[in-house]
Image (tube, rainbow, N blue to C red):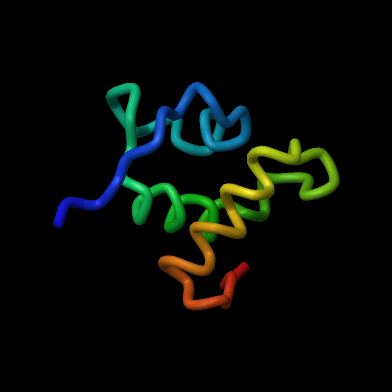
Length: 69
C-alpha cells in the first residue's frame, strides 16, 4: 500500500521546512521526518490547529507516539 501524501502548501510551517523538497505533495513519512529534523526552526506556540493535529497524527502513525525533537 502506498504511503499517503500531503499538499505542502496547506501547512505553512511544513512549507517553510520543506524548502528543499520539489513538488507540491510530499509523502507523509517524509513530512514527519522533516518536522522532527527541523523542529528547532519552529515556534510550536505559533502552529495552527490544523497543522498541530497533522503533526500529532503523523507522530502516531510514523513516530509511534514519540516526537524526537
